Length: 216
Image (cartoon, helix red, strand yellow):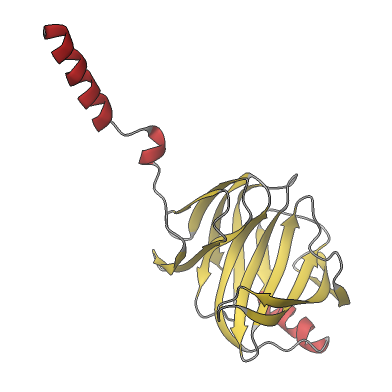
């Protein structure tokens, strides 16, 4: 009886001790504010994505065998601000992007200023609309269309505007107004700004990132 009671006591103690994974803070999918920054975390629900809002403009994310997710911190509404960021991004060898990412309404536009990408170039199959030299690098401008896909207005058809940096980097400053102007000059019209974040995105891949966002 004494041995049996001891086993029961040990089992109860073990059950009360959280595993290390349970102690990692996590943020549920959705949008909100945290430490003065707006954040957005979207996932299609496939695979595993653990996203955590950190101090000030920082966040970290780890993903495994995902379908698609986009997560990061920034501002709402988007604006012609100068954005700086730094950190680590372990997506160079998988299908992942690190970008300034945002949406506008009327018209509904999804836009990317891609600072680095992994095994898949997001410009593949897109229509090239020009180039822009800014912030120490050259970006190629593209336009694509998404038909009946998820958006901030539900399932919709909308255009995507892209600036894809030729010289990949993880850390630096992005003068976002220069991209807005270049898109306008290429005939790509944005609408009224919704949110704007420094985003990590993964598609059918596994990886991790730890990023901190600033407004210069």
